[in-house]
Length: 554
Image 1: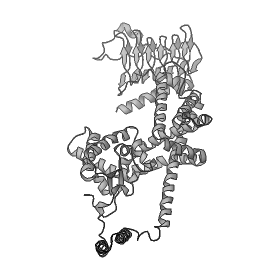
Image 2: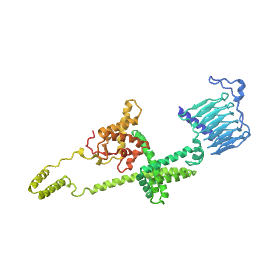
Image 3: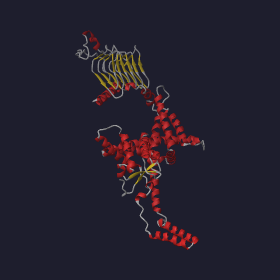
Image 4: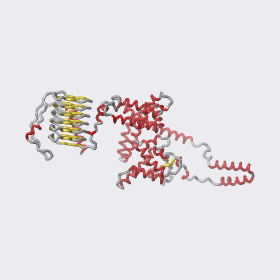
């Protein structure tokens, strides 16, 4: 019901703002006198002597329509206007207005007589005179002074109604409350007025300190990404410099296919649970891609420095970021640069991932085609025993016949003893193939579902992530994997080949929060890293391997 009220009020405000000015004007004829409304219990009855308050004769005279874009519209007290409209500014009417007073992204202040309504969108409405229509504020407050006489309704969306006891409203009063009262968000108006309407993200105007703080905060994040993952940024920069057309094509295909993929996942119903991971992954790729674009731009400047610490990729990101911030100040070009950087950055990272996957696949095929070296299969334990027998014979030539017999007996016994089969448990788990991104995300998704079901059964909604981390730490210590890992044949191992202890599993579980908090970039780093390690793997010194089928993980 609240959503319906919001839609009705916004539609009403839009009609008053845009359609009434272009509508044909009817001859000014005073409306017939109306019977005063019956008094209600919420409002004291109006005395017959006050009947004149409810007469709203249309203001006489002629006037022009006062319209201003990105500045205020003012009507002095001794003048008459057809309408007073301001887009990106405030509207003030001290004189008579034949039609309406409208302000979009600004306030309306009316002290003269108005034939129709007074509307403010993303602003406050103040009335202290007679108006024949409605008083509306969308995402703002409505204030009625002591001389306010409103012939229509009062509608307040996302704000408050401040009414003087002497003010009168003939129609109804509708207030739609929202979780946030937009009337208090005065800081947003300078950005809309000086940036959005001019097509740029930043401007050198008062009241935009928060926007500059946000811009430099993201620049700091990009520099930190370049410091932590300099190799990945360098690789993406080389891809953009050598194959810019393919990178742009990958960006366009990503933009076109992402809505299609999202729709397909929603249609399957089960895929709805995957959508948040997809969007988080795209957001993280976009952040990393912007760092790549800034590094590419900065390299055009730092490339002339030569071999020095200032030629580092992180410094190039800083220089490129300062250049882009300068572009953000230019109207129209600022928003174009912002969108191009985001689109191209997304494309170059995705295309680099595609090239990396293709290179690894080609290397695996080349290794499989080459096969083991001739005779390598026979050069195992048998060769070791042969060398041991030869060493024993050499000792016999030095120490005599006794040594010969004593040395020959063990050699003969070793030759007669069949080679025992190597048990699977002794194979170094850290030498097994590393698990990729998607199979690990599938195992994680299974674990999330299982823990979520447990929370639902226990009727608990608190500390879900903490419980998931505790579940992972316990399972890693006891079994080296989780239930999702068992189903996907995955196992967590230490890089040094040691056994997983409590300290390692706890550190790994807590480090997962670091991988998740930066928009999931720590998990996404599995794709970039040569060792298929996430951030929490690198911190804990672990890796996730794929165990061959048939090996029990229980």
